[in-house]
Length: 130
Image (cartoon, helix red, strand yellow):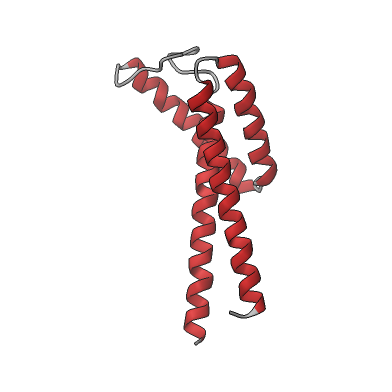
């Protein structure tokens, strides 16, 4: 592996670890703190701000807000019609931290997809050069 290829590979691995770490942190926070909406809201807000600090280009922000809005509206509709319910709801049958968590989760996942597809693209170019 050439030096440049190794640097790209290491950067991609670091990005994958960061993305999976952010997703895991959010998941663990919700799993451990769901009983206290106020504390969880503060933690999710901090994680959201950290995530947006890392990934904040125009499409990241648009994706975050669209997923947060549409995901939340869908959840409110599902809860309203009895599809499921939340154990600790606060607004319209869902926890008030939900939009931030949904947007943060969605942004982290789309960044993960971007990293994986970019890695695949770089790998394909490298293989076709041989």
